[in-house]
Image (tube, rainbow, N blue to C red; front, top):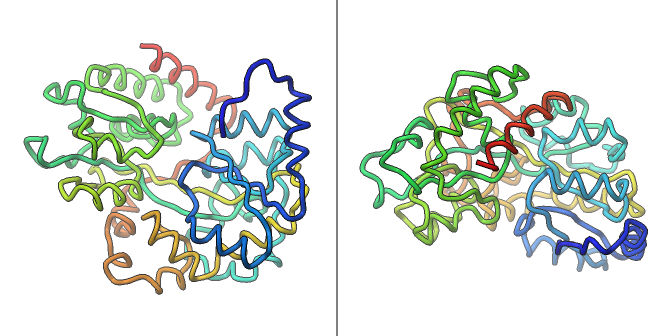
Amino acid sequence: MKAISKAVGLSALLFSLSTLANENVLNVYAWGGYLPEASLKAFEKQHGVTVNYSTFENNESMYTKLKLVKGKGYDVVFASAYFIEKMSREGLLSEIDHSQITNLSDAMEGLLGQAHDPNNRYSLPYIWGVTGISYNESLVEEPITKWAQLWDAKYAQQVMLIDDIRDVFGMALKLNGHSINSNNEQEIKQAYESLVALKDNVLLYNSDAPQMPYVAGEAALGMQWNGNAYQGQAEMAELKFVMPEEGAVLWMDNFTIPSGSQNKALAHQFIRFMYQPQQQAEIVNSLGYASVTQSGRALLVDELKNNATIFPSVEDIHKGEFINDVGSETLAIYEKYWQRLRAQ
């Protein structure tokens, strides 16, 4: 979504959002390029509606916007797992009626009932994946297998980091042998100090099509989401993706229905539609991210179904760790050190 001028007051913003409330319009708020275009068009045609797709750059900006408008103006909002508990606790989310998602039982084992929403009252998984390492094998001297290698002085101004606080601190916490969900300020501070030591190697932070700095030859190595790594590999065979030996950062993005939605019935229909096998397969085919149902994966060609970049091995998953909510007090500690890091 385009930035709104500071001159526009809250009342004007709420008014503009209220005009979006229409039973024939589904207002979706997500990352850019995050939903298959073919699926959106199919849903519009099948239900005789229009999908109004607005975008944000990261979870923090999404949360800030939703908080500002008190959950109004949107019908389906996508959020990473570690924001779900916070948003539900603050009254920003509606409960999801599971009886309206008749294909929910097809979800892969282990994706439902995660710590961020044990009964999935407020969220249902959309895609899941890992934050690992990408590198251009034509620009580095040896295979990259560890987070620690990003700190090598020979990679000055060649490293890209994902523009996401929990991904970046998760990497540094894993590097130092800690949980990515640490609530220990000394451990978080140690991660911060490690990231300060990495500063001379960091060329940029990016979360908008993060495969492109590699494809364009700007970055030689660094962090990457596995789905974007797959997209980059389609354009550059030299682009590798690896699960770091210290353990990857695991994440899950979720459907939510904001408490202020005025079109909850259509929102449920959209979630049910996206759980259909054809749409689950389309997520993988067009985005390169792992969808969440068994029947959707079954429709994929073997090249995708067995692709280790999209679907990591059980062993690699066990070495990683899902990002979970750490509570507002601990999150404030992360944000304090994140701001210091970015101001360096």
